[in-house]
Image 1 (cartoon, rainbow, N blue to C red):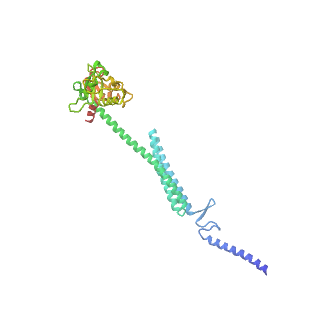
Image 2: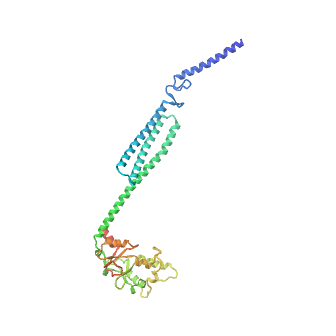
Image 3: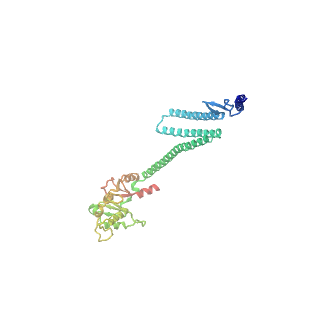
Length: 352
């Protein structure tokens, strides 16, 4: 009896377990998540992996978006290629083409990535990891595309501003030249007899010019009461051999005051016997290593009578730190001057 009971219990248990499994299988066959009896209505196998219909739809949507982006970019590229064939491409056209393609590609790519992120967010809302990864990708690509577009826009806007400024400057220069060409040099110059602050060099030598005479000339005033700012040094036959600006005169005194063991009298005193020879070879601080004597003689230019202010300005600009042009019969430095044109006379004409 014991043996029969044991034998009969065992198959009964097996049958019960099999029946339970069958029941589970049967209930799962009509559900949405059954795995033991094969794929359900909402689930298919893709490469041996279970994929839902929603996942398939999302993959299809992403592929369609990528295909649409490709078609858009391809059409843009073809249009640019036709335009390039119609017009020979130079460096400027290549830069324009490259910039336009970068902007368009960035816009298309940004749109594509945005749509993909939205699609993933909608179709995989329950998959937190997928949504989070898509957001990371979007956050990484957005600054990149934005930087590309910003660089291109900055380049082209700055280029246009530079071109506009260049054209305005060029137009202003042309107008200035036309103004100066319309004025004769005799009309704008200060005649020799009207020059205030002239010192005649003894023996026609700059080194022998008395500092007392320069100091005396610096104290003179123009007809309007304003102190003069430059002293013209002439020879006995009225040829100009140099000019001393008030700024250079002040620098001479400062350099001498700072130098040890050097004594020079710059005062307007009858007992003052010092000459420019004492400061002729001293080095200028603001124009080092140039000597004061060289600056006094080489900071002037000459123009011929009958020229225009445009010619005087050109002569002035041909020398460093030149603000004075002296007019002679033929424009020679050895000839007597008949007039004097400063940078102030030229500025007055340009501002008129």
